[in-house]
Structure formats: structure tokens, C-alpha cells
Image (cartoon, rainbow, N blue to C red):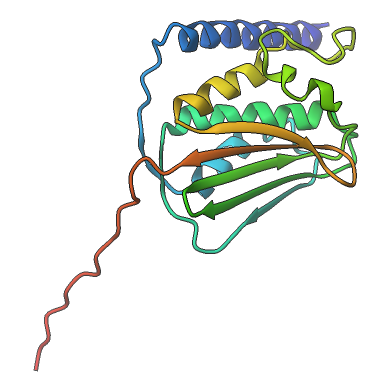
Length: 196
């Protein structure tokens, strides 16, 4: 009984936080705290936040060599990944893996979260980013349909875009693209004094 009460309290707290976050984003009250971060730090932080929820799930992370620093609000970007990973865990079979890939492209950074669930019907692939929209509102999964609209608002605040497509082998594939607003800093090698 106590466990059920704690779980329900956490669910209500999460829903309240999402509603407040969406209200702040829509009101333009969120000021991005942009700093330079390594993409692996942001992905790692999101995975740590979901450690308990994903502990029985295989998560494959693929990061290409030569990833550059990205100028973002790390807290907000972590929230995007947490929402996407949480959805992947909710809407795909428990024994199937979740795949994350991160890649530097000529104009920015691309992050993909993919699952092996039923996928998203093509006619609903744009609607799922709308507020309060759920594909199956009668299902038992908790939520009010704000997670993906929050993701879109955060990514767009960074000047990027987020889209979804179905994987050829089954499942949904969410890709967010973050453009380079500034070129990443380069670290100059220190000059060493030569001693003879």
C-alpha cells in the first residue's frame, strides 16, 4: 500500500512539473543557460536519471568519433532525452533494447533515440508533438501527453528540430538536430619551455 502511494505521488509530481514546464516554455520565460558541453556528458546524465527505470533494459549507445562540443542548456537537453528514453521504455516490449546514437554533422549535432515497439502510425507522426495528444489515451501508461510537446519546445528554443519516423524493422525513431550557433572552442596546446 505504501509503495503504491509513493508511486502515485511521484507520478502526480512529474505531471505537475511537466505542466509547469510547458507553461514556462509557452510564456517565453525560459532563458537558455547555454554552455559548452560534450555530448557524451549530456547522454550519460540522462541515463543516470533513468537508472532505476532502465535497469532491466539494454540500452545501446553509439557515438561516432570526433564529436564536438555543443553550446546548449544541458539541463533542458537532458530533459528532452529523459522524456524520449522514458517513452521508449513505456511503449516498447520489456525485453527489447533501446538505441541511442549521436553524430556530428556539418551544421550541428544529431541525437537519435530508437525503440523496438509498434512504431507511430504515419498519419499521427506530426500530431504526437501536440499538447495533450496521446495515440492510445485509454492505455494504462501514465501521462497527459505533454512530454513530446515539451521536447519540441526545448529543441526549437535551441534553434533545432525534432522529428519521428518508423524503423524498417519495427519501432519508432526520434531524431533531434541541434545546429551550431557558434563554432566550438578549440583548445590550444600549451607551449613547453625547451631546456638544454
